[in-house]
Image (cartoon, rainbow, N blue to C red; front, side, top):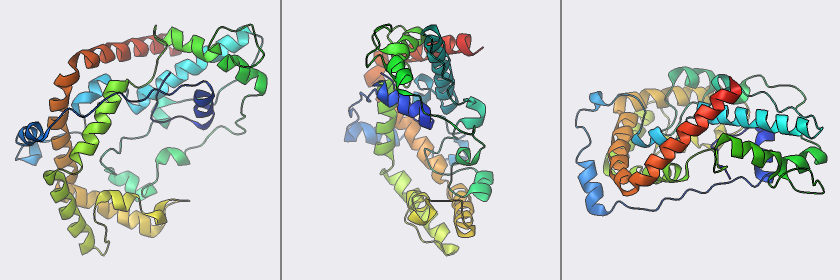
Length: 290
């Protein structure tokens, strides 16, 4: 079973029919006292906070790495299908072109804001024409279900997963992924982050855009379909500028770093094992994709 944050339409459909979904496995470990102690470690000088990286990133796949694993898995499935007299080609996967930029703390790229508003640029990149869903006999071979008796349990998808990692569970690491989600939920309502959001909101209001926090802006229903309007682009540009001037993202990143540092010792053995698991699947992926 596997978990990916982002899959193409055909790949996602196959992941579902192959029964691949690995649920996060983390529970809350940081109590009020430990959270307060962690927040005391947030730098007072936000100019020292650089980048968007977080401690738990070490044991998680990046968006580009996820796509590399998907690409390798597709190659293995295609080889397996060919060995059973079937031909099917997945849509091409280009990890550099197709990987989404992280938006964990909202839109942060001024260039993207000016060109796309809040939309994911990957949505507007050219795609292969006439992408076809696999026919029933191919689906049966991929999943190992149906009337086919010439494929191993789990079908070609299961065979691919066993090659990628011995436990047949490629994709995001469940404890790391779950703890990352947990730290996001813990930190978004902490006083430093809510105060930064209030400052951001005041900055937006000065330009005539009234949103209580950045999540409300990026989630505006008016910005959900089609290409970005001039109004959406104006809001998005102002959003990025206000995040920069108020230190909103730097604040949240700083808070998440100390909270993740507090979470990690509670799961040290699992996280160490998951980092090794991630490194192994990436090494195998590189061998397959060249």
